[in-house]
Image (cartoon, rainbow, N blue to C red):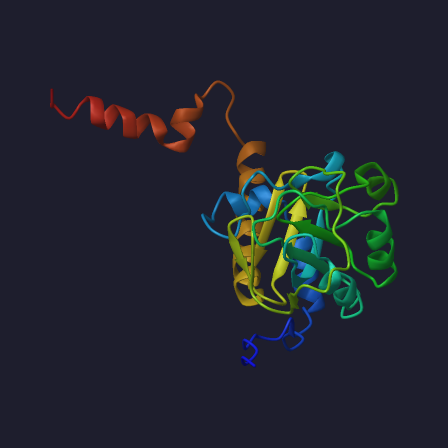
Length: 234
């Protein structure tokens, strides 16, 4: 009789990440994703991940990371029980784009657990119902075919890939109508403070802008163009 093939464990759960400091949550809640997008080239999920049904209220949460392979959502159901109030589900579908792993039933359980929203690198289902119940989801559209409890495999509280971004367990997730950012907590604080200060300066500049002055003169773009045109080449 041949030996059985060795295999890894089906399920892995990493250590629970540290809670986010309340002042960091308040800081990030003052930002729009575009404010981070003005200063960062990383941390922003690709624009294929959009607010489902256009319901994208500004939402900040601690990343509860989950990996669900193929048509199996066993680990996602279990991970709802790992949540702490204020968590945001970040679901890595490991390349699957056919099966919807989240609908109004799982979303209702997530809300009861204090989860503030979900980001899925794949489709959802019951989009109208979830928007109606006030549970925001950022995903790659909708699908009618759903995952099942197939007992294949899954992981939680591990690094995941979502929208081209590596999301660590406990990362700060900021999502709104324009998209999703995910950053480590220490970086989120530093970048958030920079973005907020820049936003305040920009508001002051707009309020004090002289009428009739072309935008390029204000930003310095015109000086750059004229310098190139007048450098004597060609």
